[in-house]
Image 1 (tube, rainbow, N blue to C red):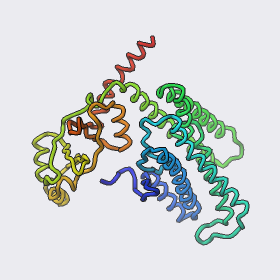
Image 2 (tube, helix red, strand yellow; image 1 turned 135 degrees about the horizontal axis):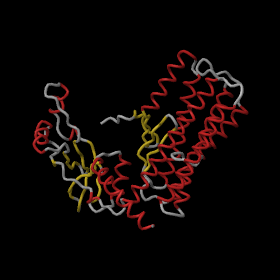
Image 3 (cartoon, rainbow, N blue to C red; image 1 turned 180 degrees about the vertical axis):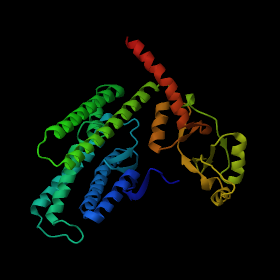
Length: 377
C-alpha cells in the first residue's frame, strides 16, 4: 500500500529515500515562485535537498556499520530524519550515529569553501543563474549552516540526541531525556527573546524582512518544542510500561484465513465475525488484511472482491507473547505498523493493535507515575 505521508524517491545504498508531503509542498511553492521571480529559490531548495540527503545518509551508513537496521530517510522542510532501529543500542553508539551527520556536513562545507576560493568565476547560465565560485560559496554556507545548526543541543536536532546519549551513559534514560528536554526549552526561550528583541530594537530594517525572520524563528520554536515534548512522552512510556508484557495488551479480535481465500468470502467472514482484521502466514511471514471498505455498487470494490487475500494484504511484524511491551512499541514505531502478530512457541496467538496499546498505556501510565511519586515522598 502507498504511504500517505510521503513519496518514495528510490534507494541509495539500500536505504529508501522518502519525501514528506510538506517538503514536496515546499518544492512546488518554490517552483511556482521561481516561474515569476527567477530560479534562485528553486535552485536553493534543490541544493538544500541534496545536502540534507547526504547529511542523513551519513547517519544511516554509520548505523549500518554498527549493525543497526535503517528503514528509510524522510525529507522534511526543516531538515530530514533517518528512521533507525535504536532498540537496545548503547548510548556511545547512538552518540556516534548522531555526530556523523553534522560532522559530514561541516567537512563537506569546508571542502566547498576551499573550492570557492580556487574556482574561477565561470558563468553557469542559462542552467544556473550563478557563477561557479558563487555556487561553491552557496554550498559552503548550506553545509556549514546544516552542520552547525544540527549541533544545537535541542531535540530533535542531532545535538539534542548527542546530549541525551552523553547523559544516558551516566543516568537512566528518563532522567537523561528530562535534562536534554529542559536544555531544549532553555534554548527555545533564548530564540524567542532574541527574536522579540530583534523585532523591537533593530533599527533601519525593512518590515517585510524582519517579519519573515521572526515568523521563521517561531516556526522553528514550535517544531523543536513539539518534538522535545514527544521525546519526553516517549521516555515516560518506555519507563512506566517496563513492567508490562506483550501478553498484557494482546487481543484476539481477528480471524485467521488462507492466503488464497477469495476477498468475496473474506468480506462475508468479516461481517459475520464482527472484526476487521484477518491474518495469515505466507512464506514464513505474517500478513494481514486490515482495511476492507466495500461498496457493492462501486466498480473498484468489485475488482477488490475478485482478488485473493494475498493480493490485498500487507506484511506485518511479529513479537513474542512474553516480550516486554516497550520492545513491541518500539518495533511498531520503527516498522510504522499499526498491527503486530503475537506468537507463542512460533504459533499465532493474537495481535497487537496500536489503538488498543495506546488505551493500555493511557490506563497504566497515571497509576505507575502516581506510585513512583508516592515512593519518592
